Image (tube, rainbow, N blue to C red; front, side, top):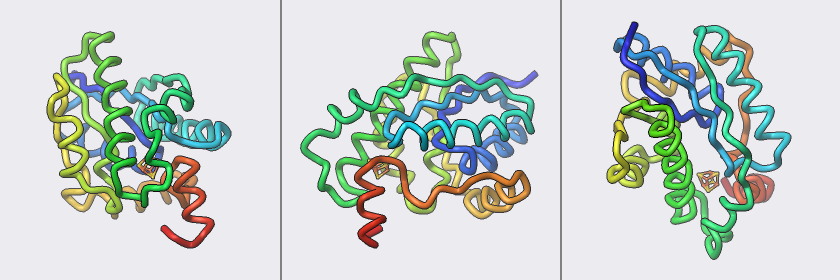
Length: 180
Ligand code: SF4
């Protein structure tokens, strides 16, 4: 059995190639769906249900965090009108990474990483910056080794839903305005 690692998961599609890579590297990932940024709640549950398809495929344990959207909104207060990739996104990364770190500590798992780095729309350097001072954070860049394209192939194979906005109501608004 490999070394346990808590994997913060942003959505099913991004989890696919990240899990594949971790398994190849000898890890035993425990999946942690903690995404209070996602809005509305129905979308949060839809993304979680898609993750369950992936978890079942790989035979992995999945933990669901509560949808604490109110607390997330407090964290990004004042940045509602930021453009995607601005300061609001850094605060959002930090929020989810802090929760993953807390969960890893609670479970006695030494290390954690995040699937957020798979997306070609998100800067891995920025995500690493938000996590670098959190104990146990592993700066694994899942974009590398063709991770993003591989996630598309695997998502199609598993018939996963692929969302067309990042997650929060502000990204949904900007997408509706044709702005993202
Ligand atoms: S656009 Fe995405 S990364 Fe940025 S704050 Fe919203 S959910 Fe978080």
